[in-house]
Amino acid sequence: MELPQPSFVSVREFCARHSWARPGGVRALLANRRENGLERACVRLGRRLLLDETRVFEWLEGRREGRG
Image (cartoon, rainbow, N blue to C red):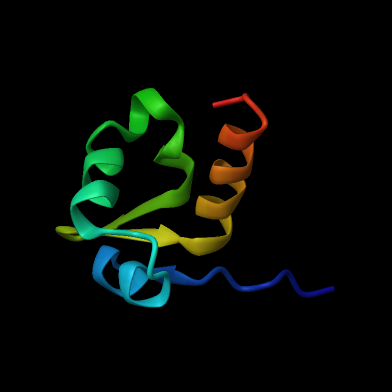
């Protein structure tokens, strides 16, 4: 059984795909990713920080449910 491949995107690509997301707001969340729990949705590739879209939405659901 093959696991689904994660979709890694840059902050710019994430914001282009989701009109409600703004680069400054996403970067502010990423600056505090260790404190707010968003770290598990991030992968560092050289100097770039990529987001796993599935995990970002899981994180958002957790915040809505009061777990984050």
